[in-house]
Length: 147
Image (tube, rainbow, N blue to C red):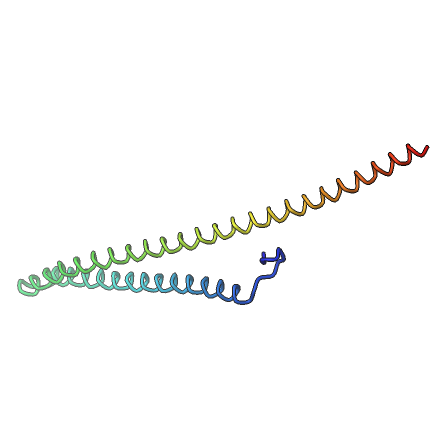
């Protein structure tokens, strides 16, 4: 709702709102991209860990010891990647919640503004109706006085 009560808003305001929303969605997409990359790194770490475990089972003493060390380091990398991916997921959800809260607040403000506008219009209609009714009463009073 525009400042004058109409459905129009200034172009600058509309552009700034559009830019803000675009920026918020771009931020969400960046967080989602980062989360996806971390999930890929975690999958790669898990595959590396499994390869090391397989090599340990198939190899001889020296190869098995090397594979076991690699397996343990792969396990640590996988855990770190998993933790980082979960943190990015939480960051994504937090950003989504902030954006939704902002949208809900704006919608509530818009609804309140529309409600006030409706009440003002009803008040004007009521006042106009009261004015018409009092004019009719005066006219009837004059007619009965004349009669």
